[in-house]
Structure formats: structure tokens, C-alpha cells
Image (cartoon, rainbow, N blue to C red):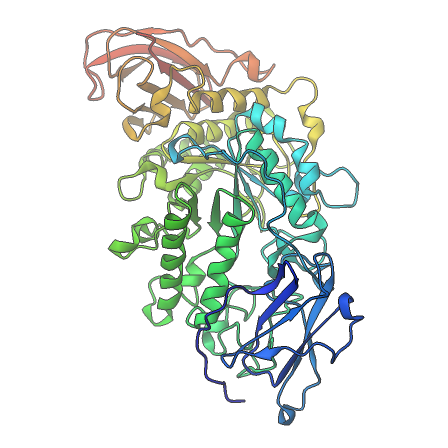
Length: 608
């Protein structure tokens, strides 16, 4: 089948657009001979509402009798010589569906009451992100996924924890009721089993009321592959592939199926751009996290193989990121590359993709390995030091750092405490070494991120049918308290650790024999700003251990992860305040003796 000429229309909107007189429908189907709207407003009559061709591949009609809440579909007639029956399709721009294989529902996006919409997300240097999977975060009915409304019930808990940003795993309508979300069937529709679009708006509004930003995970490297309504949407395709929304050659192939969108086609670029901006405009979210952009940049994710590059994929990301910056200043755009590519976060004007931050593979892998490996002698503290220091474009907050994410705790990998001692996540070793990693995350320069339940020492690995065990919040939970205390220090709640929000770091002591690291964090330096963090990565206490300090005077112990407060079987090894002496050490002008327990992090700062 030969493809028809394609030109971009001057349309005022796409999909089902409620108006004062009814609903305007507009759909792109360039190979259709005729298109009809069918729905509950005309008893699903297949011929009573023919759409008008705009002579550019788009079809439109005003339907006075239609209204929000009505169900509908398009019926697409292909050329007679194609020998295809009429194609019943859900609107690609549909905002609400009965389910992934059901009907579209006309939805009015502008009627929700947002109330006082004065929320402003914290700047990157003060963000603490909590990655959430709505279906398993707070499950109230056994055997059923969680919902936006059930998640809202835990927002006060998240605020008390110190979280100020939630990153929700993908919430576009997907196949079935259980999924990670990385199989979007209807990119513009909010997942019905979670509650649909109004429930998600309640979720965002409630988060903002608690001072928590919302970042949405979006999937543009592929669609589907299950229940994929866009597949051969108007009947046209080449090589048995996906048709107008997809590449129809070798570029279609992804690790998830042959469903890569055609980034070079104007209408598809517009579709993806409209989807990205929809989340920011209609749902008031505070940012986007793009899934695996290496498969937007190249066919096989191999950045060293220029023959497989997709230049139009890179330019698409640039275009959308510029649009976000211009139309929604202050919002954040995060890219997942995992290839340590500094161009991901360089400005578009310099040739970069224009993301504000990217997930940092140079951090997560060495930190996880260092805390998981069984033998102390095998801990690579030099690698840990490099991970702490790593940054993009000299900006510490262009990276998101973590030890647990949905990718790192599934697909053959597990939660960090589980990796340390399988089946014994409540063991002393699992508690001590997993929180050692968490403390490094929350004291290193970057945007720290936790995965849901990490603060509760969740066991095993991530599954879309394994909900968080909230019973872990009951009784003595020193680990939860430790996370709260670390986040409070990270966000400078007490006003004495401003340096943990600062750009600057000097990792001045890396002792690979003793397995001890010390680093200095600061914003402008001085009392209540400069912070010294010391990490002991061995099963031995260190007493009388001399390290450098940047200033004279008394350095107070603000945090000791070995405290009884965090575990009744922790040693509470003494870590007294340090009075420095004027003796240079490790390149710093002053020094002092510290005590630090096994697998412990201590934090010092000054009052004056």
C-alpha cells in the first residue's frame, strides 16, 4: 500500500473537544476513505454521523447531541481495494476509557476545581524524590491494585518522612489491571483501574496541599505492545508493521516490540509533544521523567553505533524540552539514559537534549556494589568516592541518585537488604549496610531518590502484585526514623546543615585499607553551612581516627547511624563532638579525632 501525502494541518485541537453546543471530534486518519463517529449519543449507529475530510489527513465533525460522559469510537473505512472491514478505533487523543479494549469516554479537562493553585516545586538542590507505583503503594483490597485515592491516604506519612516530590511510575492506560505501566496502550488516557483522570487530579491537588510535587513517568521509546489501538490505525502499513504512528522499517524494533513511534513524521511528533504538555497543563504536574531515552536516540540503545542513530528522536526531545521550559518555567524534565551521556543535560542551544537532570548510572552501580558485596576487603571505596563526586556539566543537581529504583530491584535483582542477605532483610547486616547506602544517597550532591518502601526495609524484589507491607510502620521502626532524620538533615530543617543543599564537595579522604571516606559539603561555607560526612564501610569500630576539618572550633555530631534510636541491636558506638586542632590533615587546615562504629555514617557541622 502506498502512503498518502502528509502535511501538518492547522487544527485547533484533537480528539473529543466539548464545546458550548456539543462536542467537536477531530482525528488523523490520512488513508481513510470515510470516517464516522459512533457512540452512546447516536445509539452506536454506524452511518448517521459522517466526518468531514479537511483534505490534509484530518477528519472533523461537530456533534450537538454529544456531551461529557458519553462513550464513543471512530469507524474508519479504508479504500475498497484494500479489502478490509471498517476499523473500529478508540480516539488516539482520548483522555478517559472504560478500559484498554473498551470505549473512549468524552471528557471535559477544564472543569476540575483546583482551588488555590499557588504551589511551587522546590528547586533541584532541595528536592527529595519518592518513586511510587500506584498499584502497589497502598493496597486496601486484597487482590486488587491500589488507586490514586488510596495513595492520597498516605500523603501525610510522606510529608512526615520529609518527601517533597513523588515520581509516579507510568499511569497511562495499559493492558490489564496489573502492570508496571511501561506498556502504554492509550498514552493520553489515565489508567482506569487507578481511578481515571479526575482521581489523578485529586492526587496531584492533595500532594500539592502537603507541599509535595508530582513528576510523571512517560514512555515515548515505544507504545504497547498489548491492546495497542494505534497499531495500523487507519489500515495502512508497510512490511507488516505498525502503520501511521510507527516506523515501518528496521527502526521499529525495540526491546519491547516493534512499536517505536515515527519521530520523523510531523503528526506523530505533534502527538508526543501534545502528550508531554498535557500532563503539565491539564494535570498540573511538576515535571516529567522520560523512560529509557537511549531508545529514542538510537535503534538499539548503542550510543557507539552511529548507523543506528535516530537524529529525529534527539530533535524531538530537544523540541519538547524547549517547549516545557518556555511554557512551564520551573518544571523539571528528567531523562533516563544510564549511559553517562553529558549531552542529555546540556542546553539545546549547545546541542544537548535539554533535560534538567538524568538518572546517574555512575552513582547507583558502584554504591550498590559496595554495600552488597559480602567481604569488607572487596569494597571499592575509591569507586564510592568517584560516585559521590560525579556530576554533569559541573552541576551536581543535574543527576538523580539512588540505590533503589524499579529497575534496580527487579528483573533478577532485589531490594538492597535482600541482596545483602537473602531472606533476612531484618538482619543486623542488612539493616546496617542498606542504610549505609541510603545515608550516602542523602548526603551526596545530587537529587536523592528513594523507591517506595525502602524506608521500611521492604523485602524481596519489586512486583506489580506485591503491595507495600505497611505493618512495618507499627511498633519500633528505627530504620524509618533514620530515613526521617537523614532527610531532615538533607533538607536543612534544623538550619545547621545547609551545605547538604549546596553544589560544592571535596572528597578529601579515601582510605582503601581502612575503608573510610570523608567528604566536605558546603553552599557558602561557615557555621551551619559546612558539613563533614564520614563513612566507615567495615565491620570494625574506628576510635581515635584522625581526619581533616575545614574550620577551627567545635564540630557537633548531628547524626550517627549506629545510634540506638535506629536499632535496638545497634551498638550506639560513641561519636563525640570534635574540637579541632590547628594541624593540617588531608589537605584541610585543621584536624580532629573521631569515633565511628561499624558500617556507620556520621555527620558533623558547626553552630558558630
